[in-house]
Length: 140
Image 1 (spheres, helix red, strand yellow):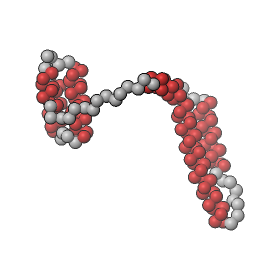
Image 2 (cartoon, rainbow, N blue to C red):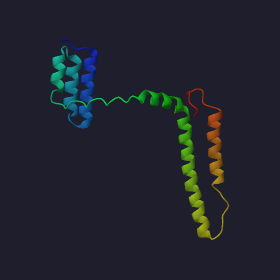
Image 3 (cartoon, rainbow, N blue to C red):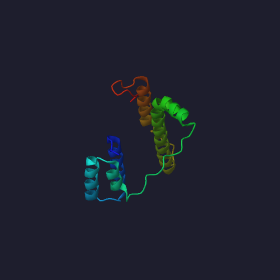
Image 4 (tube, rainbow, N blue to C red):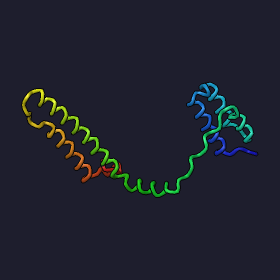
């Protein structure tokens, strides 16, 4: 049976996987890839991957996967924004910890200096939500 472009591409993908796994060295990969791209019959392609392990079977399909995917697609614009606030919160915890340790070590309650960088950072996050970047299609 004659090989199609899709058959050649699948063979090339399998060879690339074998190269990345260390099953083929670069010279052997290039030789086999050249033969795969010039193959006319499916049997020629099979011979090129006969000594390589079979690819893993596709993962079982979950009946709830499409609903979850559509939900994540809808939540995607807000996910980045929530992730940015998580970074902000992490920074707040670290800066507050430094402020607390230095206050304890100094024996006196120091002014809460993390308010300035956290306030600027929060203002930037709010501004990014209010005035999105139209050129990239995202809020940033």
